[in-house]
Length: 203
Image 1: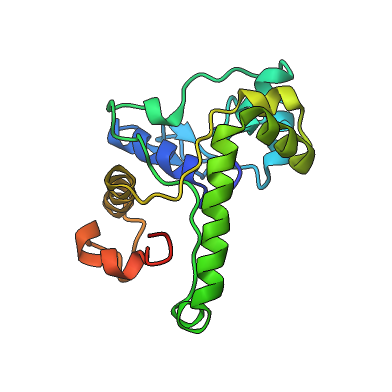
Image 2: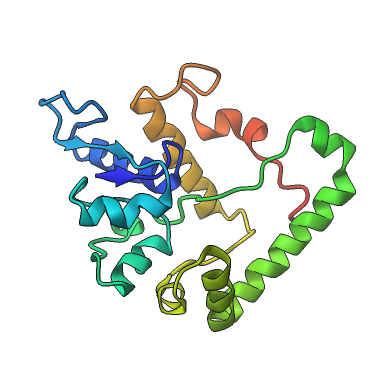
């Protein structure tokens, strides 16, 4: 199975769900004890070529790239990540966030507030103007409008309880998989929430 970045949300959710199901993954092609070999394809542009050349049997990636494969007749979407078992566990898991250093937050609070206000307005507009947003997306990243319209993305700047619960699922699962060695190791979300999140600019 291919992926485009070691730190991508789809790859982390997919790997964690396999781990939960008792399946072993590896990135070592010589590890014959593993159930699934994960392959770093480096870029989203390599998704379809890797599939059509049979370098991989499938890949996990962010929308709208699965929709591109579907629209071009080069692949099928077999499951949405939020529908991976166990039911409900992977709903509202975070994908992308805006991060800033403590120094930037202290030095540029008004600029950050303005930027995040712009992000909030943009998210609301995209959700309410799906066709127009698809046209912009298609032109911006170089895909067909048909593929962009198939995407099921929902944008939000609301750090809801379910969103934070999703972040906690990431944290716990990755820790269980021994992915942490520093200050996140062995921690629950409530232990480090203040270190991870600063929502003062989105209230």
